[in-house]
Every structure is written in structure tokens, then in C-alpha cells.
Image (cartoon, rainbow, N blue to C red; front, side, top):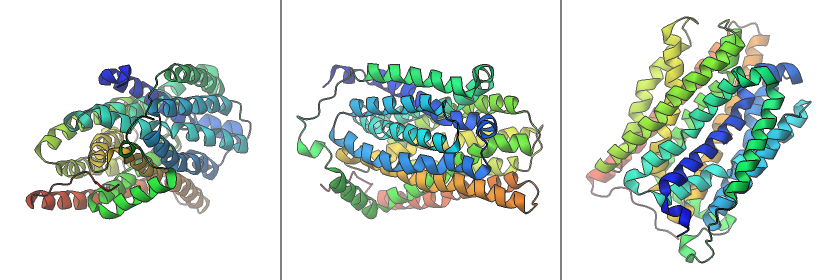
Length: 426
């Protein structure tokens, strides 16, 4: 075993920091949305395309490919290459003077970031036992709320004084330095047995699709997880909604969203990890039941927030529920799926899940939301952002139906004395 693998907690901490940086870089576009839209002259559809479709065209497809590479080769080197690519292109984003230039830069930011999660999830699944895996996943995915929160905080503080372009330059330089350091961590898997490593891309994808076809419990979990990510499509327009339709100050909104995302997204990651490990000790199907409970608890508050006034506590409770829910699900969803697949397909399965999320929730969700806002606005419909974001909330909450199906199937398997086991096909 490589020397650095003897300290799984240190590996986890390092991966979480890298994940934090990835989501700062990714969400700076959202945090600076009013400034970038005004500076470059974007309409809502173009902004939605940048925040969604551009990302999925690169990130979604590359996540599967990078996942297959991580199942075959050095996961640390795959991650290092990804950090270098996305950091250089974050720096290049600060030079963009047009919609087209920003599209190209963000396309390659996404390509680089696609390397991280599949390789990291597979590595953590190896280093942590099933009894501790949910908590490890929860800590790693804390990088999402911390990154989103820090991006809005940076935009409202540091970024407000130096501007969005210089902020992108600084972030790019930090990432390049991290990539160089990470490249020194070697993971030689060339001596591993054939069954311990993934197959070439096409064969690997055939294997993964076969697993998906045979395992209905995992399918339902992944479909539900994709729908929950409509929350992130709504987040892309939350700042604009609060500024345009609730009359709040842009800098104040950025800071508040950052603080709330930081606090409640992080709380969700920790709570999901702790609860996931506890329920996993009782029964393998309890992960899906926990997913159902989380959606039922958070959904009503999210809906109520869309009808609340800007000074209402209901507004902030709903925003916090929306920040909490998806992050609370990450630990259980990833721990559950990793227990259902062979070790040599874990990164590819994670990449496939990310592809689905980015196609159906991020790309279609963002582009469709931006288009709907423009259409409703052109027709003179009042509060178009409120109506569109309400629709995204309803779609996210509908995930409970799929989680319930997964929980029911797992419960039946448990009663029959046949709990879900890792797939053994080669």
C-alpha cells in the first residue's frame, strides 16, 4: 500500500479541501451573476446556458470517461491532472470579453473538475469500511456547501473590492499550486490483479449499464438523486430572484446566501453522514428510508419560502431547507451505491451518476429555467422567477417517490433474507 493510504483521515481531509476549491471555482459564476451578466451583456437564456448546458456538455461526459480512467489507473494522478486543467481555465475565465469566450473557458473548467468526484469516491470507498463510509462521504461532500458558501462570501467581500476578474485569477493560481503538490502522490496500480482494475472504456460502460439494468433499487436511488438536484438549478437563479422580485441588495444577498449555504449545507453533509452510518448498521435498506424522511421533512419549507415576504422567517427557513436537503442525501446515496457495485466499477458508476445529474438537472434544469423566465417575462406574467423556482422545487420533492420505491424494494429483500449484495458480474 502507498504510504499515504495508511492515513485515511488525512486523505479524506485533503480530498475535501480540493473539493472545496472545485466548488468555489464552479460557483463563482453564480456568485458574481449580476456583475458578469451586466459586464458581458448576457440575457437570462445565455446565463442559463453557461450555468447549465455548457457544464454538462463537458462535465457530464468527461465524468464517465475520467471515472473509467480512475478505475484503471492512478486515481491521484487523474485528480492532479483535473485540478491543473480547471485551475488554468478558471484563470482564463477572468479574461473573457464575450459570451463565446466565457463558454470555451467554462467548458474546460468543467472538463477538469469532472476528474475529481469519481476518483475520490472510489478511493474513499477503498480506504473506509462500510460502517464508516457514509461519514467519510459526508465529510468529502462538505466541499459542496463550503465551496458554494465561500464563493458567495468571496463575491460579497473580497470579490466586491477587486472585481470578478481578479478573483478568478487568484483562484486559478491557487489551484495550479495544489495540482503540482498532488502530482507527487503516486498510486501504482499496474501490478493489481485484473479483476481489481477497470476495463477499457467501452467494455467498462457495458458492464456499468448491465449493473444499472439489473439493480432496480440502485436505479430508483439514482433517479431520485437526479431529481433532487433541481434544487441546484433553482440556486442558479436564487440571487436574481431575491434581487429582482424581493427587492434585496445584491451584495447583501450574496453574503447571506453564502453564510446560509455554508452553515446548512455543511450541517446537511455532517447529519447525513452520521445518520447514514447509524442506519447502515441496522439494515442495508435503511439508507433509502432515510432519503425518504429527509425529503418529507424539508419539502414543505422549501415550497412555503416561495410565497414568503423578504423579511419573513419563513423565507430563510425554506432557503435553509433547500441548502440542507441535497447535501444530507449525498452521504447515504453514495455509500449505498458503492455497496451495490464491484470495486472495479465504483468510479465509473459515480461518473455515470454525475452524467445523469448534469444532463437532466443542471443542464436542462438551468437552460429550461432561464428560458421559462424569459418567456413568462415577455408575456407580462408577474413574478416569473418565483413561478419557475416553485416548479423546480416541486420536481425536486418528487424524488421522494423513487426513494420510497427503493426503500420498499430493500425492505422486501431484507424480509426475504436477501439483502442487497454487491454485484459480482465481471
